[in-house]
Amino acid sequence: MNNKHNLALAEKFEQKPLIETSMLPEVGASQWHAFLTLGFDKTTRGTVLKTCDHKGPLYVQKPFYPEGRDTAHVYLLHPPGGLVSGDRLTITANLSQNTHVLITTPGAGRVYRARKDKTLQHQITQLNVAENSLMEWLPQETILYPNAHTRLENRIELADNAKFIGWEITCFGLPANKEDFGEGHAEQGFQIRQNGRLKMRERLVIDDSSRAVFSAKAGLDGKPINGLMIAGPFDLKEPSNSVNHDELIDSLRQHCTQHGSLSGVSLVGEYILVRSLHHDSEQVKELFIQCWRDIRPALMNKESNEPRIWST
Image (cartoon, rainbow, N blue to C red; front, side, top):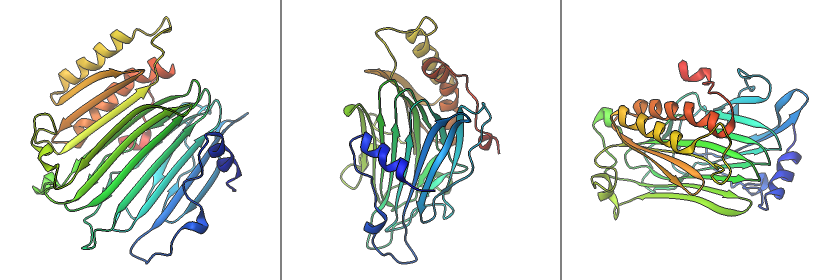
């Protein structure tokens, strides 16, 4: 496979490819500068993985089609299981017009304790979604070990009539071992642009100067699991006859109320946001799946079809 399709689509979105192989620095065996670039296209066989270029320990399995050939379910694999000091992972998915891709992971991601030099542990996820395409980014939770030093970035570029559902569930520390994130540095970003215009930006920074956010009522309220789900854009000016946005938001809020966690739903511009704080990442994922079952048919006109890996 080659990367011509991926490079062309990146140019279409007016941005340079995030990584060129020749620019990757030489690193030792204990760290990885790795990338995975996926290109999806619509053919007579439906949505297909047209190109796959990678360096380092990032792979995908052959796509699954539990919903039929128009929707590709893709499992992202990272055999080392987590980031160590000096790691830099870049994941890019380029969706051409009229494609539908759901990407998830078979297990939790991990960011391990940093070495003494606190070299950054960095992951970038770049999702480029062309006209009339649907992108679902639904990974399992990410565990930040005490004293990790990490930056996790999600960048989504949407074209006209492209739709997106995504979430991130973060566990700060190892609560089962009674180890909190009392030391370490974490930066998280979630950014969505449509036709080059910024539509949504979320950013969280945890360091020595902001660690009080863990206990603050206006922060994480003493809960180690922080979840954020974003879906949109919804057409609020001309909603379809089948979608009542007020009823959808009421239903999502009812899920949050019944869940028992500190959770809530808000409408920000054309995007619905669901936030949840909890002591158990599985409970947050369960809430987000419930919300996804309601959001998906309303936004994408497709009933929910859970990836099989979630049941194993």
